[in-house]
Length: 517
Length: 92
Image (cartoon, rainbow over all chains, first blue to last red):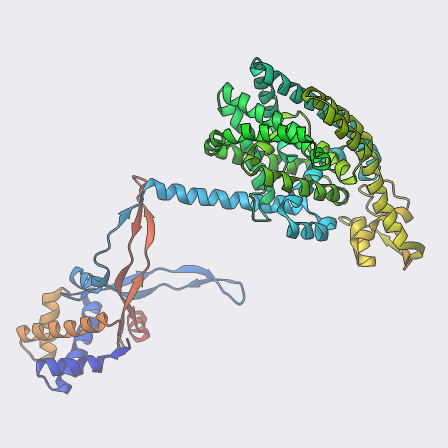
């Protein structure tokens, strides 16, 4: 590979043809001259074995000067083009001659499309995650994701729950939102009642089929809400996509009953109903170690181990459906969250709820190790309760981890009672939890605000700041204190009732903060 | 100007017979081909340069049938005129 000139060609020609070097050189120059002459006369020169030289008119064209940005016209000119003739073309392309254009089959197209879709959903998932773990929770959530994937998902669940509440009422009045939880929890308790009674009935007769079908339909309607609040799965590996993947998995589990005959529905519901008992019974069994409970568990597990096979087969069917539902969920999510400016408040609350979830996670891990094949069914569990089930579970975990006396008494009750009795204890368990979590949530919210105020004391006015369009109190906190978490001081100092509704032009007094440490 | 005219014109310039000129031209083209084969850039100063370029494979769609085709890579001979040649035809 190098640059060959006319003289090089002439030398080789002389060597081959026996001409003198000068004669060969002259001959080569004559060729070039003749081509030029021919172009001038006829505008076209055809040489056999080489190709065609042709004069082409290039018309004027507009352009823009790169430096000045002015419009300029590049004047048209004449150009010599060369087209190799077919013999030359084939000779040149000889190394690649064996290639032929191939028609691409449908499979290739599909593959491309699927890849595109995955990327799109992945992007959305990333965005969703960014919302799930905003500003304040950043540090904590990062730590959590490092620990386990499940925690993060769990953290996003309470966040999701809170969204609806916070949109209704401003974040400062979180105490009120707690009261809203009470009916929800009661609902959960009721729905659990239904489930547990189903177990009894199911053990006695199979007449429950109709009821379970109804139940499945109901869950389908509230799918969107439930999906968000569902329990985690251990299979997930990547931290970023874990949230969405889990939800999709869970949607899958939900969508399966829709596409399958009644018998399957019954199976599913049986499974989930059993799950209700096991998940509730397990923490207690863990503490009490009552032989009855353990035998019960193993019995249930045996039953379950037979079922997942058919379930996994149906996974592929629900896969596409799940993607759509996830997208729908995301859309709803955006409509609810984006317009409101309450992410900060939201994230604060998630911070609170992380701790119970940690404990919950531990318990879940335990569950998962004991029932490795039943992940899908554990996920579908909450979908059959008509309201958000996670609070209940997490509360149970809280109770169990706190080693509350109530649980002990209930556990002792369980020792002496039959299965029917267990359902009763479950109910009482739920009701007894309600006030506990209420106070717990309220307490932890207070903790945050108190913790913040105890760190610093508010001094005199440092400066005054007139709010401009687009500014928030949080931005001010960041600007003046270098820490956006200190916004409550500004809110407090200025007696702002709703920090989301501050008017443009409002003068905010920035207080001096003295650290107590 | 076709090949015949080109040869006769060339023979006039070089004072050779047309058949001899034809042979020489073919010889010259063979030499050129040898160089193209080795990916050489053959440049005639004041005229232009020949170069073999590789065109990458691409996916093309037949607009009438909508079928997609994979067009394989290929080697093509490209000619780039020199500035002298360009000015020669744009002087007027």
